[in-house]
Image (cartoon, rainbow, N blue to C red; front, side):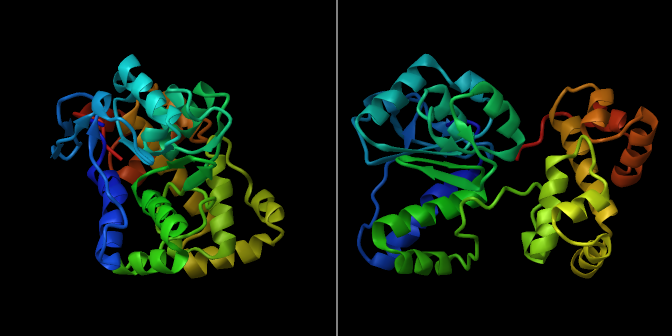
Length: 307
C-alpha cells in the first residue's frame, strides 16, 4: 500500500529472497500487487510497481503491507478485492497497518490478531469481533498478523519453517545474522533493547507499559512478580543502570512525547494519559527529559513522525 514503510516491505520480501538463494531453487515465487494501477509510494519515496489488485486471479498467500493513511486507503474496492482473494482459500497476512485493512474487510473476525502497538487500543475498540493480542505476531488458522517490521521477519521465518522445515528457516535467519525470537506471543515492546533485560525486569517493564496512565507503586509490581522491592531495584541497577522508578518515568515521558508529536490530544489529556496528576508536574518532567516544553514541541512539528 501507499505510505507503508520500507523496512516492513523488505521484512516481507527479503526472507523469501534469502530462502531462494539458500535452496538454490525457487522455494518462493511472488508478485507485487498494488491497490490501483498506480505504483505504491512508500514513506521513503520508493515506488513499487505492481499488478493492480483487480487483475490478480488468486495466490496461496497474500501479505498486506500498510502503514499510514489507513482510513483513506480502505476503499470499498480494496476491501472487496481482499475478500475476493480470501474467498479462494488463500492465507491472508498483514504487516504493521495491514491487519487493520484485513479487519476492515471482515477477514479477521473470530481470529486472534495483532497490529502495531500504537494502534492496538483503537484496533480493539473498532473490531470487537477480533481477538486482539499485544503479541509480536499471531497465527490463527490461515490468518497471520504482525505488529511491525521486525516481528514481520519472525512471521516470515515462521512461514518458511512451516513450508520448508525449521532447520532451513534457521539457516535463512543466520544469513541475516538475525537472532530474533521464535515466540510469536512475546509482547511488543515500546522501548526496544530487549536483550539487556532479565526475565524479571522484562516482566516489570511489561507491567509498567500496561499502566502508564495510573502508575503502579513499586511494591505492587514486586508483589505481582513474586519478588521483593529490593531485588527489583538491584536487577534494574545491574542490568539497565537505572532505578525501576526512573525507568517507569522514562517510559511515561517517551509515551508523552509520542502523544505530543503524533496526535492532537490536548496537553492536559496527555498529562493524564501518562500518569501526571497536575499540568505543572508534567510540564517540568517533560522539559527535563526532552529539553523543550510539550507546547514548543507541538508547535515545532511540521509533520507527524513515522514509525
